[in-house]
Image 1 (spheres, rainbow, N blue to C red):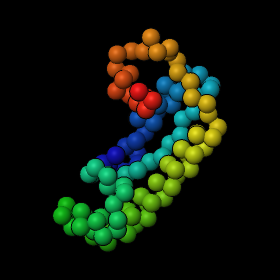
Image 2 (cartoon, one colour):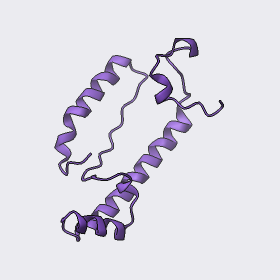
Image 3 (cartoon, rainbow, N blue to C red):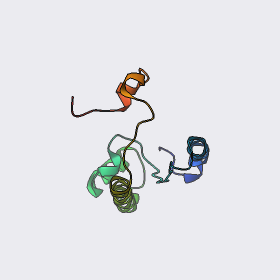
Image 4 (cartoon, rainbow, N blue to C red):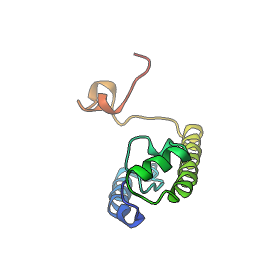
Length: 113
């Protein structure tokens, strides 16, 4: 998210906690916060690319090092969480293929097609 204040995530987190509760106990919700994001793929930029970006946007360049380290930690957390999901959860769909809502094709990529 673009804000540098993690407090701004609270309404979205509350919404997803509610949705997770409604969906039932077999659903899990994990929170990974990333702040001060302004451009596409910023989280995977190198430290020097962040310095360049910060200078261009008139931000203190010395923040780039901390941002780079925080982004790397965020990616590691995402990798770890993804690995945990991959090893512990068997994918299930709430709908059969014939019952899928029309927008579902945009959300689900079936690589076997």
